[in-house]
Length: 439
Ligand SMILES: Cc1cc2nc3c(=O)[nH]c(=O)nc-3n(C[C@H](O)[C@H](O)[C@H](O)COP(=O)(O)OP(=O)(O)OC[C@H]3O[C@@H](n4cnc5c(N)ncnc54)[C@H](O)[C@@H]3O)c2cc1C
Image (cartoon, rainbow, N blue to C red; front, top):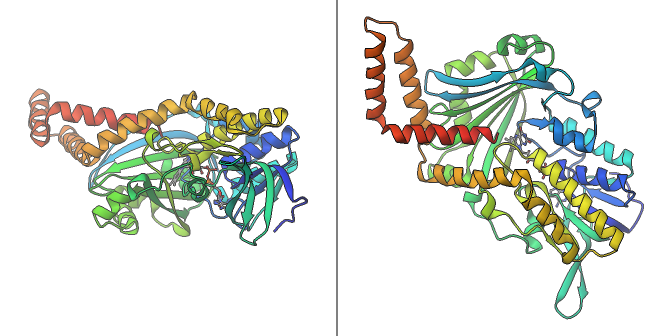
């Protein structure tokens, strides 16, 4: 644990994830005294995602970061597999231009990346206190009714004061709840994920995924192979390993009495997946919950002496989260810098932060995801039905037999219509691609 140098900071940030560290770097660059408090032994020790970070938002915090950061691969291939029990219909794109600077996205291992990212904040002048849990917020009375957040209480019992506290504490958001900025959440408001990291030599990864050097691939998978409920699998290629994640809405898992471990085992036994993961060795396993539920579940993002960023603010759209976390951290730093200049940390000034978030491009994606989620809720079998009918059609289409092409297409049409009406299939396909597009 690193010792801190003061009992008071202008800004205390709870959490050294992408949101907290992006804010810390910007604040330190503006010469504002800032302390980041992280419960892990080191930043990233407790964190996991699929996953990929995105070049444009990350470069807003550290230009040309790809020259020094611990990155795994530069992603050139993105695929979506709609899977049935023995087959998959694949949509995808590969673009080798993405493997050249300035690149597009990178697979990363959070324990390495977050640690490096946090060191950039320290280099910029922020202080970092690890292995320490913030257990409560401290308040200052302002008049008879009004209270302003004025610091934090640590698990050691120590309190540290601050002009403002930025909560970047991730999806569980316990302090955000304690601060009265959000309601209690239910199981339906979360997705539960597990992740396996499977070791595989670089040359094997390159040959299995048709990649060269440090080019990478991401494959999103859905359908029968995952489960009979809405479940999602993601596969990311790292330098010498594969990341496999599987996740589903927590309430759906409970309702269907499903275990993610069993779903993962079922998925890994799919013949197409067996080929990709054969001879791998499990080297890491983690689980995590992330917010589910979209726009209407957003908490209040500010109050007197407090702001909320990243997953704590439920800023997630599809699998995009680390970039929205960084961008919200940047916005928070901008507004805190304004408040610092005015020496006014009241809700009146901090409200600008919420306006920035609500006017952002990513809020459009979050709103869009709400519509998609609602569609999924009323059509829970969408991915399985769609995968089943598309795979069935593809099997028929590629089966070379004694039938003319036009008769074959008529046969496929009538069989697909028997499974479900055409408008439903078209609408399912539309929403599935929409859901993928926010990945
Ligand atoms: C399976 C999966 C795949 C994903 N894939 C991607 C992807 O490919 N790309 C992408 O952009 N996003 C992805 N995400 C989402 C992404 O991981 C999150 O959106 C992002 O990590 C949010 O960043 P954050 O800084 O808000 O929170 P976090 O990364 O959760 O960081 C919060 C930090 O706060 C610390 N903390 C919490 N409470 C306290 C406390 N009381 N005291 C001290 N410290 C505390 C935690 O230890 C943690 O370090 C994925 C998520 C999952 C689950």
